[in-house]
Image (cartoon, rainbow, N blue to C red; front, side, top):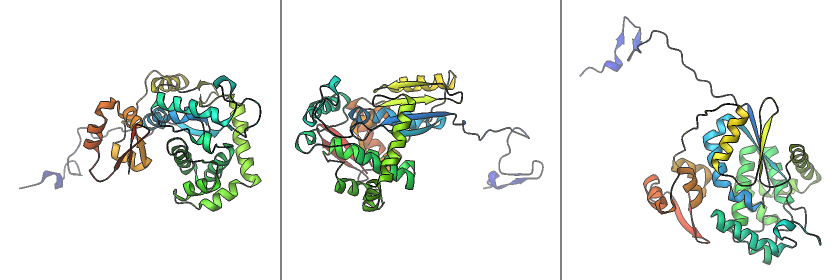
Length: 306
């Protein structure tokens, strides 16, 4: 049987199937990333942990329109006798635990919080400095992965991410030299890198966490403070782009997402794929090959590991 796709046509000069048009215009250009998105955050910010599901989907589907810049904001330099966050009733470390638990229960991004009673984080500056050193030496992607792993360890698995051995272990698990990076972060140059982020956060007018600021080429933009639904960020992006319609990319497959992220909580999968909680297990079993993942539970919430 003759395979026409392998035949070279002498009239058209085509091996295979010729198109209808002799000359066809095609556009391989990606949209120019004309928007800068600054995400002012902190490793111990519970509301930043709570918006992980929405922020991930926003980046996955609309990231081709913007450059994404996490900025360390310095939530807690150290505990002292005065109020740290009087609006939330936080004067000492133990006050954090019930606040964190409330955020975790509301967002369904699990937070244990008992660490802040038993072995409290004394400052968010050490893991912030490690983030900056990884960013400088190894790039934004690995730094952002460090931030994610640190938050998992702090909020869900109750580890003190300001302690040197914990930070070293997290960095080692990224395939980097944890001892060397943490040592560098503890030097004056590490704090200098962090001070640059603090200066940028002030320049952007960020005073709370999380703050997301989108700026266009005309240096005009929008500022959004606190956790918001996906539509809020999409509308903000439309405003700074000054266009009514945008073309979101399709959601990645769950297998490729889990391959990249390593660990996903139930809420993150539900938000990414518009699932009801009752549909989660069936969706995961359909999308993932049995044996390619582990399903576990913590604080009443399921999570999935590669």
